Image 1: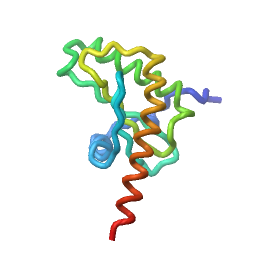
Image 2: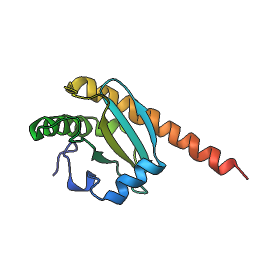
Image 3: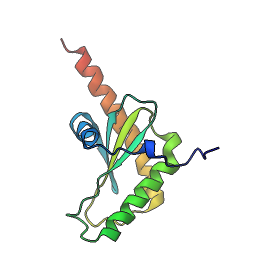
Length: 129
């Protein structure tokens, strides 16, 4: 039996169109280490996308370390995250040296905050004539 905290390939956002949809239709929330973009995905699962740019970190090993920490935070907090959404995680600051415990706390808080904003935005657009 697979561990409930496994990071499965189906939990990745890989398609550029899914990233673009998240950026276009999603809601954002920001803290010290993390910017989270949340968009509904029409699935029962929460998926993760990472956007860690070359412009900020010139060395691949630095970008990869940030990605590993973000991915691990997602994996460990998965049961606490909203369901049926795509989460795109972006470093909130240039040259960020992320701390796993802090990223975990921020991820859960920001995911729920951005999801609430998304739900409010959808309710407002449905209420308009």
